[in-house]
Length: 183
Image (cartoon, rainbow, N blue to C red; front, top):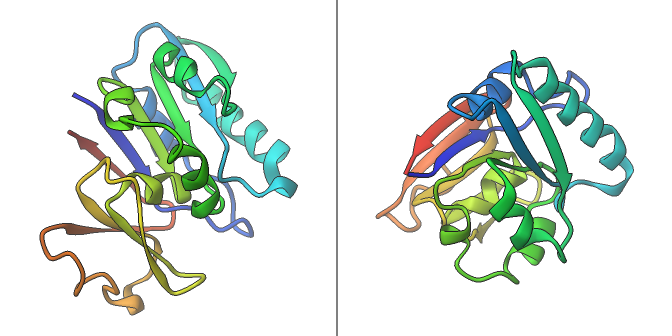
């Protein structure tokens, strides 16, 4: 079974991802946890800051566990996924992470029996389809999880995905909201 920890994103003017997301990502992991950091979506100007914030949050929520981190590149992506207990897919621009991940086949099998933690763009990429608040567009995700996804969701948005692909439920993820799926 694969555990997906999905996060609705954050407001950079308010603060980074809260503890619950990292607690859920580390829950049920071994004493020595291997975390593969996939920052393909992140905006370049925020990359160093977001990597530091992410590592700090994992460290702050590890309890007595020992953490080992590796950074993803296109070249080491499959090897890193095989190595990892937790695969963290950062937020940023969904199109950027999709452009890289679409190069790899059978990602559902690559991610099998892992903990996949996706923030914002990372969550969008996993879904069957997603809605972008910024561009007001509906796009196809990787289809790894059988849901339509809206991150940075606000009640006044309604459900812009309601009329498409009726066989899939819509996950509406508010900023700072964490949802866990075991699939």
